Image: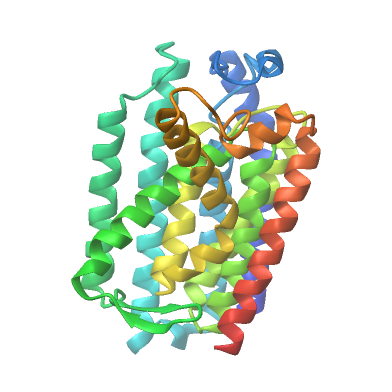
Length: 337
């Protein structure tokens, strides 16, 4: 029955996301919620100016519908799953859903300021960081209160390591950093949604393997939402997810990893996000140290490959393949371990 629940969650999320785009995208066009392309980006992206932004609202609806349908299937088919110790799994599901929506709300506010108030920089950086700090604090505190947080982490090649009190600042930085890394990945048509689709499929398989049924269900719903969004977002994109969508997906990614108690899996499933964020940090650091020299033609790294002549479709294909390989490695790591 659990397999049916995962399927229903993914299919519902895919269908609702894809179908809702039929009225949400025209609504965004009518309200003139169009993307303003930054001048520092690739010059050929100027043609995308005016494309409806905040399309992430479609997979808000889709993923939530998928979770509800999948959850109802589990309640009806496997009621014993939610009794006794299983109640903790339900709590983790609620925490994951609320966390993703909380980060998404920050992204929505950022997009609203950019697209409606016409301030291209969006929400001021300090306010964005404060909001992310508060959400992360609430997220970690919630996991601690429900007994789902441990300072012991299984690391590749090192085995189980007890980080003690240092776990909390490290986890804090990882969560905030990963959410923003997913945001950086959303720079070309279909990239963030394709990479996150594969990452969440990996989390679904691993969570199922570990007996974390509700997190597997949640991951299936997010994966389905990403697949449905690709109907509208694959090149040439008819809508962009905006920070509304990318920060929501960032929240979903970290929630899946931490709620199942395996944050180290972000090293596998989140490899592209880490590369995107790493390329920005390297570029900025090298630029300052060398007084103007650059490592990449442009960062994040997907823009570097654009400047090298790669098409958006090629970049998405290569990055998705790399994600798939690392997701498989992550699955093997958990299975063997």
